[in-house]
Length: 292
Length: 282
Image (cartoon, rainbow over all chains, first blue to last red; front, side, top):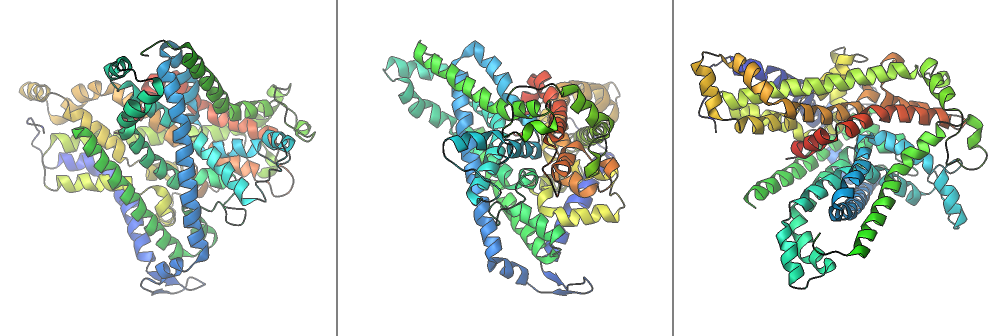
């Protein structure tokens, strides 16, 4: 807490004004509108609106399409998170072992962060393209007929790969930082007591890395749920047969293409609640880490 | 490293080489594809070494673009992306550093309320309030403008928190000394706080520039006239041709151009980039 302060009444509000104005106009007002809209229903021509209570939410609960989106989102988020975390952890462990060469590898591993998720989607879409892509050609040789335009499982694998790929460098950097903060003396003491590398990994590295891992879990779930719109839209557009239609994509589709504003707003509110829950978890954890 | 285990070192190298190869593969294939002619893809499989059409493909993207899908030349889209990314990153830093200054160095009524209002932006990503936000921007007449592309994205709780943390670590003696010398708050801000925040501003700029450049959903909605298309949102429109196969060599040339600016920022400013990344998430 600051002891030395400036005593001015008007100035702080002037300084805050731009941030508060943008927040109020483009964040709070639209969010309030979404909440309001989620209790209303417009007729087909948009001429009249009526208050329908929780009907929009109830309709979602009974909608096979929405429940499918929830399921798809869960599979997609878990797969993307585990894949990017797993690969990043292996790479970080390897870099941590190689003191000098590690720096070179790090430079070669961080740049996918610069690739927009939408562009990552296009790149993988091209690699897996059934007619001109490289990987279907290779897969064909081993007897797998890849087709993400027709087969739901292939489409899901494609979007998971593209999303996890663009996230590897981020997780990698945090794991490297986490590994470097583990005191070397612990490893040495364990080694003297006869613990081999594998045992040391499970008894020292993994437990001491758990704050980093937990943080990355939460942040990556947020990423997979909310920031992968570009990946989906640039590749599968939710298809085939709704198999990659994640919740964020459905909000947009129902709102802009389907013009079903009430349902889209109700979906927005549900997503807001999920973000709020995830943010609270993330900040609770940070408080813990300070005391750690 | 605790003990010398050559076999494990070898394994580490192997893992990393495979890792680097996998991580680089999509971009390498895109680059290779961008150096070939349109018919090289129809022969069955994409070549894995660069072809002879590099200059031809890229100069075509810069001069005419892919006119069949109504796309402007790529130079225009790069310019739009640069304007959007710079407005977002500079805007975020400017309004956040001012808010953090107000919150840390002043005591005023409703200060905590202001803090929580800014905090709320963290919980409302644009994807979850997309329809009403679009409506606000449309009502304000900001569709197809640079202001519409950037202003709705410049509120930033993370940047505000970062500067708040930084200011809290500044010694009180600085403020006292400035006040004894008769400096007002704005002079203190300009002559002492700003210079001391230089590295943090630079690190934040790197992260926010990449964030702004890589925006996809928002520019897709806000820009309907082709002279305001950004390159990241433009690629999709280019790959999305209703009939035939897309012209992959040109799509991939555009993808490479879209990736290049943020890529250079990350590689050339790696130290600042890592600092910014780790700090904005604290």
